[in-house]
Image 1 (spheres, rainbow, N blue to C red):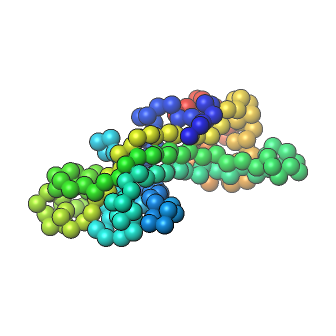
Image 2: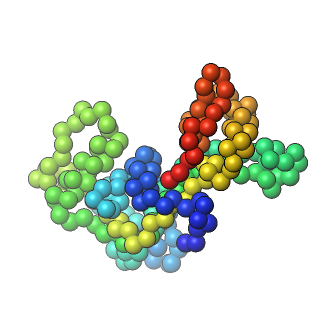
Image 3: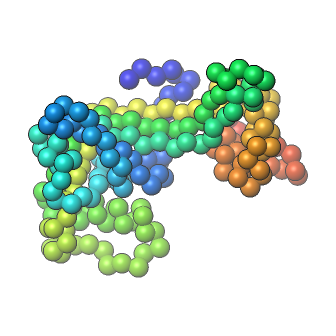
Amino acid sequence: MQLVRKFEIKSREKMIEFLNSQPAGRLASIDEKGYPQVIPMNFVWADGAVYMHSHPAGEKIENMLRNPHVGFEVDRDVCFLPSYYFHPTDASQADTLYISVVIKGRAELVRDAGEKARALNALMEKYQKEGGYEPLAPEMPVVREVAVIKVIPDDMRGKYKIGQHWSRPYRLKVAQSIVQREGLENARPILAVMQVIIKDGRLEIESDPEM
């Protein structure tokens, strides 16, 4: 995958941080007729791999057992930018702020009960941060009954466009347009990603967004 360098996420740590901040990803496998099958999955990044839990039988399991080469993608649509932010009539100027990570790797079913339990606990820690459950142990029947898919990355790339390619005055101009279109409260999380803050009723650049 060729990336424009100014849009490339250079830090592996930032990619991992982004992955575990997102609720779902998409797993792509190849079916028996050669078509890609893409399905949304809950997941967690842990110990250098992506882990997902699954029913022990199904098309995605059959696909990966037949061909372990898979894709995995996670993205966040930060904000749509209407064309009139940039030009009064040219629709081609419409744009989107986003963050994404794409993984190409090898999928396998986790057979070791200890690794399965660790993966399932990592999933619970991600999705149920408040606790209220008994940690899973390798000897528990549920660990044996559920399937855990592991994707080992061969290649992981990240891409982001959150205003880092604009000058500071231009980023403030776009931020003001976002506030006018979205309303202040809806705009706050978008501005946070753009590293724009509201101080004394004014928009200010906090820092240059970098990943």
